Image (cartoon, rainbow, N blue to C red; front, side, top):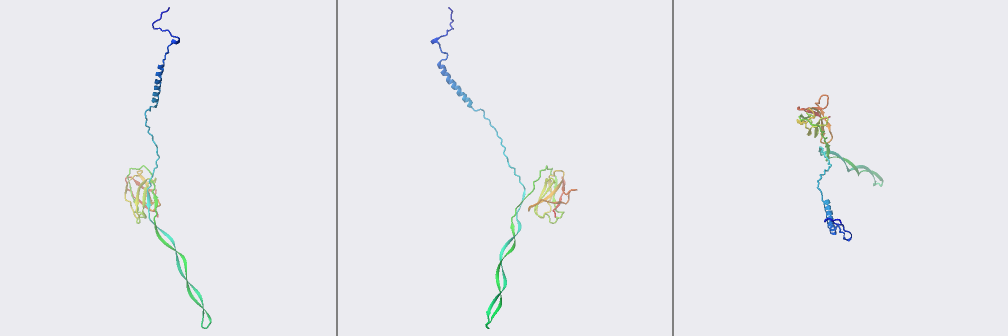
Length: 254
């Protein structure tokens, strides 16, 4: 008969067989599973790191360009108005009168008399009425040119030409510019003025340049190109150079 060690156990069969998973162990595992499921929901719902995002927005903006203008007010205008009136005119007429003489003879006598008749007529009357007139004269925009070092010097002068007595014919603005449109100097003058005086520190685009002069009347219109009486050789334009004060002699067209 084989011997049995103290640690060996024979399997039991039938009603005497034991269960390896008792009921109380299953009951303990159910709350543990619910707890793990609840912790999974908490971990999933936790927010991560909050990041700040900077958004740049492009907004279109209108650019407003201011244009220098001249405003003129008050101008005398002659107006002709029609005024109806009545003129009394006398017309001579002849009336025939029949009278009986003492000799009982019928005598016809012509008696002149005047009949007054009113005839409506229309009279033209000229009246001078002061009307306010507003004109906007746009001064052309200056063309952008790389300026020089500002060593030019000049003056507007009307003391040589046909305007040497009368001067500026009316209020307005003189503009001196290079043929490219680069403006060098301006002079706002009143009627009768002859000379602007020396204008210094003008930014010539080159060491030596040609110039043109225009006049803008204060009452509107223009520009009026002015004749330069001391032009550069072989041209109708005037000239300026750095470090030289040179007057531009001008006159208005006839």
